[in-house]
Length: 450
Ligand SMILES: Nc1nc2c(ncn2[C@@H]2O[C@H](COP(=O)(O)OP(=O)(O)OP(=O)(O)O)[C@@H](O)[C@H]2O)c(=O)[nH]1
Ligand SMILES: [Mg+2]
Image 1 (cartoon, helix red, strand yellow):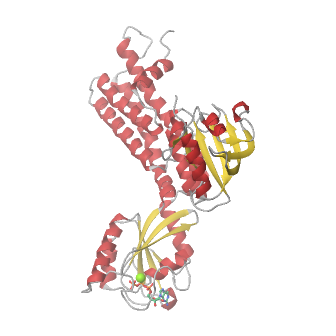
Image 2 (image 1 turned 30 degrees about the vertical axis):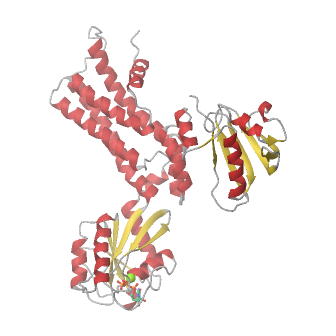
Image 3 (image 1 turned 90 degrees about the vertical axis):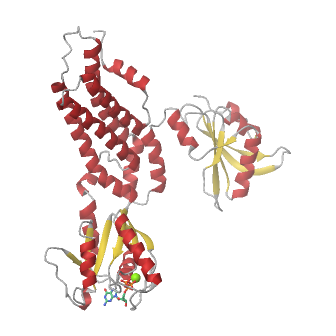
Protein backbone atom coordinates (compact mmCIF):
# COMPACT_ATOMS: atom_id res chain seq x y z
CA UNK A 1 0.00 0.00 0.00
CA UNK A 2 1.27 3.51 -0.78
CA UNK A 3 0.86 6.31 1.68
CA UNK A 4 2.18 9.86 2.00
CA UNK A 5 5.07 10.58 4.35
CA UNK A 6 4.12 11.33 7.92
CA UNK A 7 6.05 12.82 10.82
CA UNK A 8 5.55 13.05 14.58
CA UNK A 9 7.47 13.55 17.77
CA UNK A 10 7.38 10.20 19.58
CA UNK A 11 8.63 11.44 22.93
CA UNK A 12 6.44 13.29 25.46
CA UNK A 13 6.17 17.06 25.66
CA UNK A 14 8.27 18.95 28.16
CA UNK A 15 11.94 19.24 28.97
CA UNK A 16 13.97 16.08 28.57
CA UNK A 17 17.48 15.02 27.57
CA UNK A 18 16.52 13.96 24.06
CA UNK A 19 13.57 13.82 21.70
CA UNK A 20 12.84 11.30 19.00
CA UNK A 21 11.10 12.38 15.81
CA UNK A 22 9.80 9.62 13.58
CA UNK A 23 9.20 9.91 9.84
CA UNK A 24 7.56 7.17 7.76
CA UNK A 25 6.68 6.88 4.08
CA UNK A 26 8.16 6.63 0.60
CA UNK A 27 9.78 10.05 0.74
CA UNK A 28 11.02 9.90 4.30
CA UNK A 29 14.71 9.46 3.52
CA UNK A 30 14.81 12.17 0.84
CA UNK A 31 12.79 14.63 2.93
CA UNK A 32 15.07 14.22 5.96
CA UNK A 33 18.11 14.35 3.68
CA UNK A 34 16.99 17.75 2.36
CA UNK A 35 17.37 19.35 5.83
CA UNK A 36 20.34 17.27 7.00
CA UNK A 37 24.00 18.02 6.58
CA UNK A 38 26.67 15.47 7.38
CA UNK A 39 26.38 12.62 4.92
CA UNK A 40 24.09 11.86 2.01
CA UNK A 41 21.39 9.70 3.62
CA UNK A 42 19.98 8.62 0.26
CA UNK A 43 22.77 6.11 -0.36
CA UNK A 44 23.05 4.77 3.18
CA UNK A 45 22.17 1.21 4.14
CA UNK A 46 19.19 0.18 6.22
CA UNK A 47 19.58 0.05 9.99
CA UNK A 48 22.46 2.54 10.15
CA UNK A 49 22.91 5.64 12.33
CA UNK A 50 24.42 8.93 11.09
CA UNK A 51 25.76 11.98 12.87
CA UNK A 52 25.12 15.47 11.51
CA UNK A 53 23.13 18.69 11.73
CA UNK A 54 19.63 19.85 10.91
CA UNK A 55 19.75 23.17 9.06
CA UNK A 56 16.96 25.50 8.01
CA UNK A 57 16.44 27.03 4.57
CA UNK A 58 18.94 29.80 5.40
CA UNK A 59 21.49 27.08 6.23
CA UNK A 60 21.37 28.08 9.92
CA UNK A 61 22.01 25.25 12.34
CA UNK A 62 18.93 24.12 14.30
CA UNK A 63 20.41 21.14 16.15
CA UNK A 64 23.11 18.52 16.28
CA UNK A 65 21.40 15.16 15.73
CA UNK A 66 21.67 11.43 15.12
CA UNK A 67 19.64 10.07 12.23
CA UNK A 68 18.69 6.38 11.98
CA UNK A 69 17.71 4.93 8.62
CA UNK A 70 15.38 1.94 8.32
CA UNK A 71 14.58 0.85 4.81
CA UNK A 72 11.39 -0.90 3.78
CA UNK A 73 10.19 -3.58 4.42
CA UNK A 74 11.86 -4.52 7.71
CA UNK A 75 10.58 -1.51 9.67
CA UNK A 76 7.80 -0.84 12.14
CA UNK A 77 5.41 0.44 9.45
CA UNK A 78 7.03 -1.67 6.67
CA UNK A 79 7.68 1.67 4.90
CA UNK A 80 10.97 3.58 4.80
CA UNK A 81 11.36 5.01 8.30
CA UNK A 82 13.77 7.66 9.55
CA UNK A 83 14.22 8.53 13.20
CA UNK A 84 15.85 11.77 14.23
CA UNK A 85 17.29 11.91 17.73
CA UNK A 86 17.62 15.58 18.65
CA UNK A 87 18.09 17.53 21.86
CA UNK A 88 15.21 17.70 24.35
CA UNK A 89 12.65 20.46 24.75
CA UNK A 90 9.64 21.21 22.62
CA UNK A 91 11.12 24.11 20.66
CA UNK A 92 13.87 22.26 18.78
CA UNK A 93 11.60 19.33 17.96
CA UNK A 94 8.89 21.65 16.68
CA UNK A 95 11.37 23.54 14.49
CA UNK A 96 12.59 20.28 12.95
CA UNK A 97 9.04 19.04 12.38
CA UNK A 98 8.12 22.37 10.75
CA UNK A 99 11.09 21.98 8.36
CA UNK A 100 10.08 18.42 7.51
CA UNK A 101 6.53 19.56 6.77
CA UNK A 102 7.85 22.42 4.60
CA UNK A 103 9.76 19.78 2.65
CA UNK A 104 6.79 17.53 1.98
CA UNK A 105 5.95 15.51 5.09
CA UNK A 106 2.59 15.67 6.84
CA UNK A 107 1.93 15.69 10.59
CA UNK A 108 0.82 12.19 11.61
CA UNK A 109 -2.50 11.55 13.29
CA UNK A 110 -2.66 9.82 16.66
CA UNK A 111 -1.60 6.22 16.33
CA UNK A 112 -1.00 6.56 12.59
CA UNK A 113 2.34 4.74 12.57
CA UNK A 114 0.78 1.71 14.24
CA UNK A 115 -2.25 1.98 11.97
CA UNK A 116 0.10 1.79 9.00
CA UNK A 117 1.86 -1.19 10.50
CA UNK A 118 -1.56 -2.85 10.64
CA UNK A 119 -2.75 -1.70 7.19
CA UNK A 120 0.53 -2.85 5.68
CA UNK A 121 0.07 -6.26 7.25
CA UNK A 122 2.93 -6.02 9.71
CA UNK A 123 0.65 -6.40 12.75
CA UNK A 124 -2.81 -7.79 13.23
CA UNK A 125 -5.32 -5.63 15.05
CA UNK A 126 -4.79 -7.27 18.45
CA UNK A 127 -1.02 -6.80 18.24
CA UNK A 128 -1.53 -3.17 17.24
CA UNK A 129 -3.84 -2.70 20.23
CA UNK A 130 -1.34 -4.34 22.56
CA UNK A 131 1.12 -1.52 21.94
CA UNK A 132 -1.12 0.90 23.84
CA UNK A 133 -1.42 -1.67 26.63
CA UNK A 134 2.35 -1.92 26.81
CA UNK A 135 2.67 1.83 27.12
CA UNK A 136 0.00 1.94 29.83
CA UNK A 137 1.22 -1.09 31.78
CA UNK A 138 1.71 -0.55 35.51
CA UNK A 139 2.09 -4.12 36.71
CA UNK A 140 4.04 -7.20 35.66
CA UNK A 141 0.85 -9.05 34.86
CA UNK A 142 -0.32 -6.26 32.56
CA UNK A 143 3.05 -6.33 30.85
CA UNK A 144 2.92 -10.08 30.45
CA UNK A 145 -0.54 -10.02 28.87
CA UNK A 146 0.34 -7.13 26.54
CA UNK A 147 3.58 -8.80 25.42
CA UNK A 148 1.85 -12.06 24.70
CA UNK A 149 -0.72 -10.17 22.63
CA UNK A 150 2.01 -8.31 20.74
CA UNK A 151 3.74 -11.59 20.04
CA UNK A 152 0.58 -12.79 18.27
CA UNK A 153 -0.86 -15.16 20.87
CA UNK A 154 -4.37 -13.72 20.56
CA UNK A 155 -4.08 -13.81 16.79
CA UNK A 156 -3.23 -17.50 16.95
CA UNK A 157 -6.05 -18.21 19.37
CA UNK A 158 -8.63 -16.45 17.20
CA UNK A 159 -7.31 -17.99 14.01
CA UNK A 160 -7.71 -21.40 15.57
CA UNK A 161 -11.36 -20.65 16.34
CA UNK A 162 -11.85 -19.29 12.83
CA UNK A 163 -10.39 -22.48 11.38
CA UNK A 164 -12.76 -24.62 13.41
CA UNK A 165 -15.60 -22.47 12.13
CA UNK A 166 -14.36 -22.66 8.54
CA UNK A 167 -14.06 -26.43 8.65
CA UNK A 168 -17.76 -26.66 9.38
CA UNK A 169 -18.63 -24.05 6.72
CA UNK A 170 -16.37 -25.66 4.15
CA UNK A 171 -18.00 -29.02 4.58
CA UNK A 172 -21.44 -27.51 4.18
CA UNK A 173 -20.32 -25.55 1.11
CA UNK A 174 -18.92 -28.60 -0.60
CA UNK A 175 -22.09 -30.44 0.08
CA UNK A 176 -24.20 -27.68 -1.40
CA UNK A 177 -22.02 -27.03 -4.45
CA UNK A 178 -20.91 -30.54 -5.29
CA UNK A 179 -23.64 -32.90 -4.20
CA UNK A 180 -22.31 -35.49 -6.67
CA UNK A 181 -19.07 -35.82 -4.67
CA UNK A 182 -19.93 -38.88 -2.70
CA UNK A 183 -16.66 -38.95 -0.78
CA UNK A 184 -17.68 -35.76 0.99
CA UNK A 185 -19.66 -36.71 4.02
CA UNK A 186 -23.18 -35.51 3.76
CA UNK A 187 -23.41 -32.81 6.34
CA UNK A 188 -26.73 -33.29 7.92
CA UNK A 189 -27.66 -31.17 10.89
CA UNK A 190 -26.77 -34.07 13.17
CA UNK A 191 -23.19 -34.05 11.99
CA UNK A 192 -22.84 -30.28 12.31
CA UNK A 193 -24.23 -30.19 15.83
CA UNK A 194 -21.30 -31.77 17.74
CA UNK A 195 -18.81 -29.54 15.90
CA UNK A 196 -20.70 -26.37 16.77
CA UNK A 197 -21.12 -27.52 20.37
CA UNK A 198 -17.39 -28.16 20.60
CA UNK A 199 -16.60 -24.69 19.29
CA UNK A 200 -19.00 -23.02 21.73
CA UNK A 201 -17.33 -24.87 24.62
CA UNK A 202 -13.95 -23.64 23.49
CA UNK A 203 -15.19 -20.05 23.37
CA UNK A 204 -16.83 -20.39 26.79
CA UNK A 205 -13.52 -21.45 28.30
CA UNK A 206 -11.75 -18.47 26.74
CA UNK A 207 -14.48 -16.13 27.99
CA UNK A 208 -14.18 -17.43 31.56
CA UNK A 209 -10.42 -16.91 31.47
CA UNK A 210 -10.90 -13.47 29.99
CA UNK A 211 -12.52 -12.36 33.25
CA UNK A 212 -9.11 -12.58 34.88
CA UNK A 213 -7.55 -10.95 31.84
CA UNK A 214 -9.93 -8.02 31.96
CA UNK A 215 -9.36 -7.47 35.68
CA UNK A 216 -5.61 -7.45 35.10
CA UNK A 217 -5.83 -5.06 32.17
CA UNK A 218 -8.43 -2.63 33.53
CA UNK A 219 -8.18 -3.05 37.31
CA UNK A 220 -10.95 -3.62 39.86
CA UNK A 221 -13.35 -0.75 40.45
CA UNK A 222 -13.59 -0.87 44.22
CA UNK A 223 -15.83 1.23 46.42
CA UNK A 224 -15.32 1.57 50.18
CA UNK A 225 -18.61 2.00 52.01
CA UNK A 226 -19.85 1.98 55.59
CA UNK A 227 -21.70 4.14 58.06
CA UNK A 228 -19.98 7.35 59.21
CA UNK A 229 -16.79 7.11 61.27
CA UNK A 230 -16.11 3.38 60.88
CA UNK A 231 -12.70 4.14 59.29
CA UNK A 232 -13.30 4.09 55.53
CA UNK A 233 -10.93 6.96 54.81
CA UNK A 234 -8.37 5.47 57.20
CA UNK A 235 -8.55 2.23 55.23
CA UNK A 236 -8.04 4.07 51.94
CA UNK A 237 -5.02 5.90 53.33
CA UNK A 238 -3.51 2.74 54.76
CA UNK A 239 -3.99 0.88 51.49
CA UNK A 240 -2.35 3.57 49.38
CA UNK A 241 0.23 4.40 52.10
CA UNK A 242 -0.55 8.09 51.82
CA UNK A 243 -2.72 10.58 53.73
CA UNK A 244 -4.98 11.31 50.80
CA UNK A 245 -8.39 11.33 52.50
CA UNK A 246 -9.07 13.46 55.55
CA UNK A 247 -9.54 11.40 58.70
CA UNK A 248 -11.17 12.81 61.83
CA UNK A 249 -13.15 11.50 64.77
CA UNK A 250 -16.12 13.55 63.54
CA UNK A 251 -18.85 11.58 61.75
CA UNK A 252 -19.53 12.78 58.24
CA UNK A 253 -15.98 13.89 57.48
CA UNK A 254 -15.90 12.63 53.90
CA UNK A 255 -18.46 14.45 51.79
CA UNK A 256 -17.41 13.83 48.20
CA UNK A 257 -15.98 10.75 46.52
CA UNK A 258 -12.21 10.41 46.83
CA UNK A 259 -10.44 8.31 44.23
CA UNK A 260 -7.05 6.61 44.37
CA UNK A 261 -5.26 3.85 42.54
CA UNK A 262 -3.37 1.05 44.19
CA UNK A 263 -1.16 -1.74 42.91
CA UNK A 264 -2.13 -4.62 45.16
CA UNK A 265 0.49 -7.29 44.51
CA UNK A 266 0.12 -6.91 40.77
CA UNK A 267 -3.58 -6.09 40.56
CA UNK A 268 -4.76 -2.52 40.14
CA UNK A 269 -7.49 -1.48 42.56
CA UNK A 270 -9.31 1.66 41.50
CA UNK A 271 -10.44 2.74 44.93
CA UNK A 272 -13.25 5.12 45.77
CA UNK A 273 -13.72 6.33 49.34
CA UNK A 274 -17.28 7.45 49.99
CA UNK A 275 -19.34 9.51 52.37
CA UNK A 276 -20.64 7.39 55.27
CA UNK A 277 -24.25 6.39 54.69
CA UNK A 278 -26.83 7.53 57.24
CA UNK A 279 -30.09 9.42 57.29
CA UNK A 280 -29.17 13.08 57.27
CA UNK A 281 -30.66 16.54 57.00
CA UNK A 282 -27.38 18.03 55.77
CA UNK A 283 -27.77 18.86 52.08
CA UNK A 284 -24.07 18.50 51.22
CA UNK A 285 -23.83 15.19 53.01
CA UNK A 286 -26.97 13.94 51.32
CA UNK A 287 -25.52 14.69 47.86
CA UNK A 288 -22.45 12.72 48.90
CA UNK A 289 -24.63 9.80 49.95
CA UNK A 290 -26.44 9.74 46.61
CA UNK A 291 -23.08 9.61 44.88
CA UNK A 292 -22.12 6.71 47.14
CA UNK A 293 -25.19 4.76 46.07
CA UNK A 294 -24.31 5.35 42.42
CA UNK A 295 -20.69 4.30 43.04
CA UNK A 296 -21.91 1.06 44.63
CA UNK A 297 -23.98 0.26 41.58
CA UNK A 298 -21.03 0.81 39.25
CA UNK A 299 -18.38 -1.05 41.27
CA UNK A 300 -16.80 -4.46 40.59
CA UNK A 301 -16.07 -4.86 44.29
CA UNK A 302 -17.60 -3.39 47.45
CA UNK A 303 -15.54 -3.12 50.62
CA UNK A 304 -18.13 -2.81 53.37
CA UNK A 305 -16.50 -1.49 56.52
CA UNK A 306 -17.93 -2.26 59.96
CA UNK A 307 -16.64 -1.05 63.33
CA UNK A 308 -15.54 -3.92 65.60
CA UNK A 309 -15.46 -1.63 68.64
CA UNK A 310 -19.25 -1.36 68.73
CA UNK A 311 -22.27 -3.59 68.18
CA UNK A 312 -23.77 -3.83 64.73
CA UNK A 313 -26.25 -1.03 64.05
CA UNK A 314 -29.39 -0.59 62.01
CA UNK A 315 -27.35 1.30 59.39
CA UNK A 316 -24.85 -1.56 59.15
CA UNK A 317 -27.72 -4.00 58.61
CA UNK A 318 -29.12 -1.84 55.85
CA UNK A 319 -25.76 -1.72 54.08
CA UNK A 320 -25.35 -5.48 54.42
CA UNK A 321 -28.76 -5.93 52.82
CA UNK A 322 -28.07 -3.34 50.12
CA UNK A 323 -24.89 -5.12 48.99
CA UNK A 324 -26.05 -8.70 49.54
CA UNK A 325 -25.89 -9.61 45.86
CA UNK A 326 -22.73 -7.71 45.04
CA UNK A 327 -19.18 -9.01 45.03
CA UNK A 328 -18.16 -7.71 48.43
CA UNK A 329 -15.72 -8.09 51.26
CA UNK A 330 -16.90 -7.32 54.77
CA UNK A 331 -14.22 -5.66 56.83
CA UNK A 332 -14.24 -5.49 60.61
CA UNK A 333 -12.17 -2.39 61.31
CA UNK A 334 -10.80 -1.15 64.65
CA UNK A 335 -10.03 -4.74 65.72
CA UNK A 336 -7.55 -3.16 68.18
CA UNK A 337 -10.60 -1.87 70.11
CA UNK A 338 -12.66 -5.07 70.40
CA UNK A 339 -14.50 -7.77 68.51
CA UNK A 340 -18.16 -6.99 68.98
CA UNK A 341 -19.41 -8.21 65.62
CA UNK A 342 -19.83 -11.77 64.42
CA UNK A 343 -21.90 -12.47 61.35
CA UNK A 344 -23.24 -15.98 61.18
CA UNK A 345 -22.96 -16.77 57.54
CA UNK A 346 -20.56 -14.08 56.42
CA UNK A 347 -16.80 -14.06 56.62
CA UNK A 348 -15.36 -10.89 58.15
CA UNK A 349 -11.80 -9.77 57.47
CA UNK A 350 -10.70 -8.09 60.67
CA UNK A 351 -8.26 -5.23 60.34
CA UNK A 352 -7.04 -2.13 62.04
CA UNK A 353 -6.74 0.51 59.35
CA UNK A 354 -5.18 2.94 61.77
CA UNK A 355 -2.47 0.50 62.89
CA UNK A 356 -2.00 -1.25 59.52
CA UNK A 357 -3.00 -4.66 60.89
CA UNK A 358 -4.60 -7.43 58.80
CA UNK A 359 -4.36 -5.59 55.48
CA UNK A 360 -2.56 -8.54 53.85
CA UNK A 361 -5.64 -10.71 54.53
CA UNK A 362 -7.69 -8.21 52.62
CA UNK A 363 -5.23 -8.42 49.72
CA UNK A 364 -5.44 -12.20 49.55
CA UNK A 365 -9.23 -12.09 49.71
CA UNK A 366 -9.29 -9.72 46.71
CA UNK A 367 -7.03 -12.10 44.83
CA UNK A 368 -9.13 -15.09 45.78
CA UNK A 369 -12.25 -13.37 44.46
CA UNK A 370 -10.85 -12.05 41.21
CA UNK A 371 -7.69 -13.72 40.07
CA UNK A 372 -7.19 -17.19 38.73
CA UNK A 373 -3.59 -17.60 39.92
CA UNK A 374 -3.16 -20.89 38.14
CA UNK A 375 -4.08 -19.24 34.89
CA UNK A 376 -1.46 -16.54 35.37
CA UNK A 377 1.28 -19.07 35.95
CA UNK A 378 0.52 -20.69 32.63
CA UNK A 379 2.09 -19.29 29.56
CA UNK A 380 -0.76 -18.92 27.13
CA UNK A 381 -3.02 -16.33 25.66
CA UNK A 382 -5.51 -14.60 27.92
CA UNK A 383 -7.94 -12.20 26.30
CA UNK A 384 -8.15 -8.98 28.29
CA UNK A 385 -9.48 -6.33 25.94
CA UNK A 386 -13.18 -5.42 26.24
CA UNK A 387 -13.50 -5.09 22.46
CA UNK A 388 -12.18 -8.59 21.92
CA UNK A 389 -14.45 -9.98 24.62
CA UNK A 390 -17.46 -8.23 23.05
CA UNK A 391 -16.72 -9.68 19.61
CA UNK A 392 -16.11 -13.11 21.07
CA UNK A 393 -19.53 -12.97 22.74
CA UNK A 394 -21.02 -11.90 19.43
CA UNK A 395 -19.42 -14.91 17.74
CA UNK A 396 -20.73 -17.20 20.45
CA UNK A 397 -24.25 -15.82 20.06
CA UNK A 398 -24.17 -16.56 16.32
CA UNK A 399 -22.94 -20.09 17.04
CA UNK A 400 -25.72 -20.62 19.57
CA UNK A 401 -28.19 -19.52 16.90
CA UNK A 402 -26.61 -21.92 14.41
CA UNK A 403 -26.91 -24.67 16.98
CA UNK A 404 -30.56 -23.92 17.69
CA UNK A 405 -31.28 -23.87 13.95
CA UNK A 406 -29.61 -27.26 13.64
CA UNK A 407 -31.60 -28.69 16.53
CA UNK A 408 -34.74 -27.50 14.78
CA UNK A 409 -33.80 -29.15 11.48
CA UNK A 410 -33.62 -25.80 9.68
CA UNK A 411 -32.03 -26.27 6.20
CA UNK A 412 -28.27 -26.49 6.45
CA UNK A 413 -27.59 -23.47 4.25
CA UNK A 414 -29.51 -21.35 6.75
CA UNK A 415 -27.31 -22.70 9.53
CA UNK A 416 -24.34 -21.67 7.43
CA UNK A 417 -25.44 -18.02 7.53
CA UNK A 418 -25.03 -18.00 11.32
CA UNK A 419 -21.70 -19.76 11.08
CA UNK A 420 -20.46 -17.12 8.67
CA UNK A 421 -21.61 -14.45 11.09
CA UNK A 422 -19.56 -16.10 13.84
CA UNK A 423 -16.52 -16.35 11.55
CA UNK A 424 -16.86 -12.72 10.66
CA UNK A 425 -17.14 -11.54 14.30
CA UNK A 426 -13.96 -13.46 15.09
CA UNK A 427 -12.29 -11.82 12.10
CA UNK A 428 -13.20 -8.40 13.44
CA UNK A 429 -11.11 -9.14 16.53
CA UNK A 430 -7.95 -9.48 14.48
CA UNK A 431 -9.13 -6.93 11.92
CA UNK A 432 -9.28 -9.04 8.81
CA UNK A 433 -12.89 -9.88 8.02
CA UNK A 434 -14.16 -9.47 4.51
CA UNK A 435 -16.17 -11.81 2.35
CA UNK A 436 -13.54 -12.18 -0.38
CA UNK A 437 -11.19 -13.47 2.26
CA UNK A 438 -13.72 -16.04 3.27
CA UNK A 439 -13.94 -17.33 -0.30
CA UNK A 440 -10.21 -17.58 -0.86
CA UNK A 441 -9.64 -19.17 2.54
CA UNK A 442 -12.37 -21.64 1.81
CA UNK A 443 -10.69 -22.84 -1.34
CA UNK A 444 -7.24 -22.90 0.11
CA UNK A 445 -8.52 -25.02 2.96
CA UNK A 446 -10.47 -27.46 0.92
CA UNK A 447 -8.75 -29.38 -1.79
CA UNK A 448 -11.48 -29.79 -4.42
CA UNK A 449 -9.16 -30.68 -7.26
CA UNK A 450 -8.27 -34.05 -5.84
N1 LIG B 1 -8.71 2.59 67.21
C1 LIG B 1 -8.87 2.73 65.91
N2 LIG B 1 -9.34 3.84 65.39
C2 LIG B 1 -9.49 3.96 64.06
C3 LIG B 1 -9.14 2.88 63.20
N3 LIG B 1 -9.41 3.27 61.94
C4 LIG B 1 -9.89 4.52 62.00
N4 LIG B 1 -9.96 4.94 63.30
C5 LIG B 1 -10.42 6.24 63.78
O1 LIG B 1 -11.80 6.38 63.51
C6 LIG B 1 -12.13 7.74 63.25
C7 LIG B 1 -12.86 7.87 61.91
O2 LIG B 1 -11.99 7.50 60.85
P1 LIG B 1 -12.28 7.88 59.36
O3 LIG B 1 -11.30 7.14 58.55
O4 LIG B 1 -12.36 9.34 59.18
O5 LIG B 1 -13.72 7.26 59.19
P2 LIG B 1 -14.71 7.35 57.92
O6 LIG B 1 -15.43 6.08 57.86
O7 LIG B 1 -13.98 7.78 56.72
O8 LIG B 1 -15.71 8.48 58.39
P3 LIG B 1 -16.64 9.45 57.52
O9 LIG B 1 -15.85 10.01 56.42
O10 LIG B 1 -17.07 10.47 58.50
O11 LIG B 1 -17.79 8.61 57.05
C8 LIG B 1 -10.81 8.49 63.26
O12 LIG B 1 -10.65 9.10 64.51
C9 LIG B 1 -9.77 7.41 63.06
O13 LIG B 1 -8.51 7.71 63.63
C10 LIG B 1 -8.61 1.70 63.77
O14 LIG B 1 -8.25 0.72 63.10
N5 LIG B 1 -8.49 1.66 65.12
MG1 LIG C 1 -14.19 9.37 55.48
